[in-house]
Length: 599
Image (tube, rainbow, N blue to C red; front, side, top):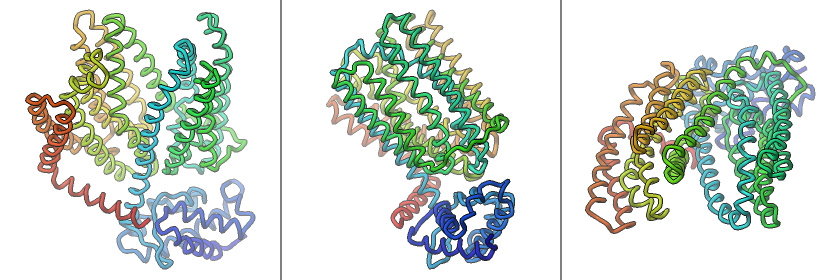
């Protein structure tokens, strides 16, 4: 057994050697230290098990504390006591948790410099996560634009129809099998080995059971529809459920560590593999099997890469009591997802029955355009924010919550205002004259949906703090409101219904923001000031765009001029209203760019 001095010497040497990384997270530095310890002391593997190595853990924790105190004494901006509280260095913390601490350190001549570097390091990782997510989104959309026309030529409408019969059943079982554990698990330290193992075995058993049920449902669907192909097709699609079990836990580990690059890489590889498999099968006459093979192969590759990246295997340990809190949170998440799914089915059914298939098609396309426009911006930010939130305290979360809400609104609100003005002209010219009604829906729904998109950050804060019941209540209530709004089409025309749906998005945004506990997120007054300033600036710019659009009919050159002039007016007004805030944002951005250049 090593002494404290021996451990401290090994750690210090490993950290100094890591200067070659230039700018590294402490998780990387201490991983290097851990590997060094493995080389020197063969029995160190038992350190991750408290029950078999508590004395060894205490020695190594003491050594880590010695090393920490050594380099903290050399920096001036951050107090040792405050940092000690942040890291929670005590004899009860396991080695693995300490080795995965998320703060950032640079190494210069064997000494450590912290302070602003820590903030830049976190910002660097956050921007990398957002950038990777955005890139994958762009590739996903581009891939769909390429593959969908090709598959449409290789497959028949009957093939798509058979697959459409199968996929909703699989999707419903996936919602139930997940149990919401993925998002909830990311809140837990990886040191809690028995919890992670229990979660894996529970998910695997549940998903395998759901897979059997999916297989059985194939016989029912085939009997009802008369399409015997569904029996084999559902059997193939049932493989997606066990693959889901292997993906969820590994993905949660990566989210917990704050590095979503592997997550995005797994998504990208899955997309590319699925597209290749689907096109190959379709080219060889695979029919509906091509779509099923595309779906399953994508999940298989994603699961494989996530598990390789997570570098952790489940242990043969099980204690269902450790999941009690997570099952409660997961239950509320399932309620939200089922409410969204069922609500959307009822909405579409009512809309089609009351207004006909043509208006339903226009509404569906318009809603897809609205979702795509907004979620292309919000989804990468939401993923990175949640990964950041589960690893940092409330003050850090509140600061970045305010910044990201402002960022989303700064991008989406003017875009929504400008598109609401020119949508009646630009959409028919792109999609054809038969989509005039879709342009009307876009004009009404785009801005409210953009406002709701910014509020989803508050939903992530509720999830991070385990207050999911509030989100679930809001989601169910809003979905019920939307169903009632569409049902009121018995008395009102479709324009009134569209405005009622728009109001539902605003209600959801306000409700989710208000229910966040004080101190858990950004100050509500600050959020309101930002929103009012951004909306006012966008409205002034929108007036200019409307004036240009009313007096000019040159087509695309006019649209380009409108966006340029409107953007200039918008940012001028915004800078006048939020001068100090935007200047601080700009300085922070320049600091991050400087840190990226040094990396």
